[in-house]
Length: 165
Image 1 (cartoon, rainbow, N blue to C red):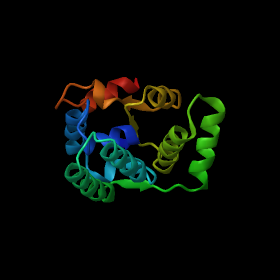
Image 2: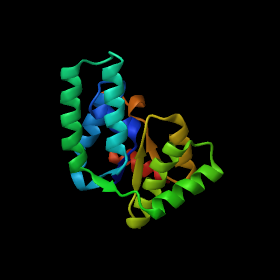
Image 3: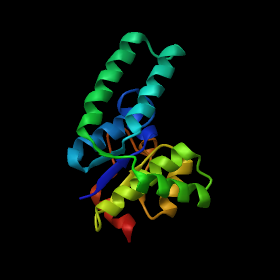
Image 4: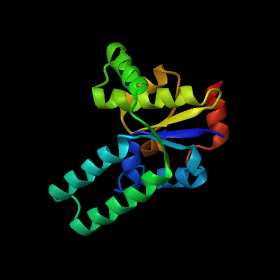
């Protein structure tokens, strides 16, 4: 069974409704908590995005407060990859060989480091950033963009297995 590394653009879909929210919720319901991975920076990145939407008037203060509470609860359930020197070095190397900006490289660097910690385990990189999905594929990850999945119908495990071949 696969592990799923949720980059911030995907993780945010659990708290603010947008394209891919329903598919991501369904995918997360099928995965055990110990198979859901995020960077330790992801909760802060999503927190900032929710506050930015609140300040711009895209969401109300009550909705923002609810989203932030749900963020706190969900982030605590995920396995968080610490931002250690190995992650920072992986991110630096990604900046050297790709067009990623540093925050994107930090996310993918965390995923690469997490993959190294679980040898022999397939980690699927989940993002809605085209640049990150391309870079993750170049690093050998299977990828999912929740916005490209039909609502409520995540990519079945057997299709992930077939994509490896």
